Image (cartoon, rainbow, N blue to C red):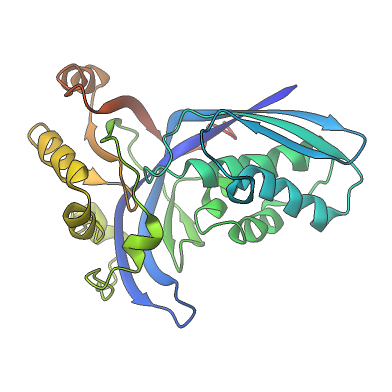
Length: 273
């Protein structure tokens, strides 16, 4: 089998500029990868079948982005080959870390190689967008300033600090948060310079706080040690540290009802690197 990594991501901030006629939202955000990854194993098949096995619990086949990505690429390329995929999940589901989107992107990238399709990322990224708004950034594999629905990407070079990421033991519904009537949808667009000056927030945070008390509790706890933020629509929260040992000291104090991990921010996706 051939093995590939599928990294988690953080949204370092998230502003919603407007709601689009199609129901999606125009936003601004920065994606940075983490060296904390799912691992996907691929074995090509000559019979054309697409099979997927995952350690994720309670994942209906119709929601399995890995299988959907394989089907989409097979249909697009008209290849006669198939594949058997084993997904070893490590990234929490429903945590705002992009695990499903990352798995889908890694599937597109891996099968492009293993099926010898030789498709460029400029073809694979729009295909990925059909699976989810976060998939293109994982296909391109570069930390990025993102606009539109998250598909207009400009590569950026960021510091690569250490992050303590906490999962407060619940899953947040992205659809619920983005459809919430109290979500701020008219943020004033900012520039990269304004981001660097700290003029940012995550507009989903107040909405998630009100609806998911465990997330609010985790934010308040972590904020005592370093400014805490929500990634995406959550449920995971994170704080940055300049040194790994600092993050380890805080994780050692983590309340037992939560899970946490330490990872370094990466400007190049571990899938590519």
